[in-house]
Image 1 (cartoon, helix red, strand yellow):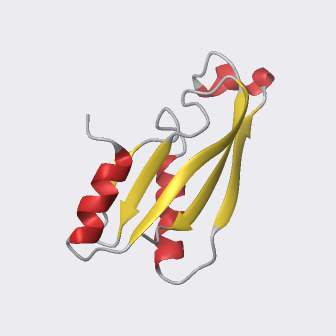
Image 2: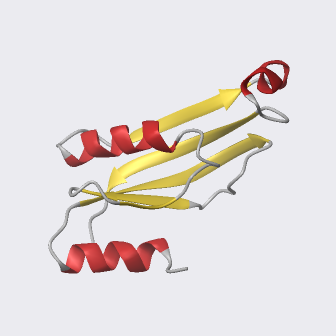
Length: 104
């Protein structure tokens, strides 16, 4: 699989604006470790992942806002262990995701 930054470089080379989301913190169980990245370009293309699919849609929306001129954002997602089973997860966890416009 191509590295996220390689894909970002390809998008930038063709003139796309890109937002980059990075996992910067994890508590308890999380499908992706700190440093995991997801990129979104102004064509609506997405590459990489910051979770197991649970929050990607929300992160894409924030990334689109950042690309439209919004400020970088630190996002927090989580679910307590007591509620995890009800939504189909074996255990709860929390992740912090930093979303910023990529500036080469």
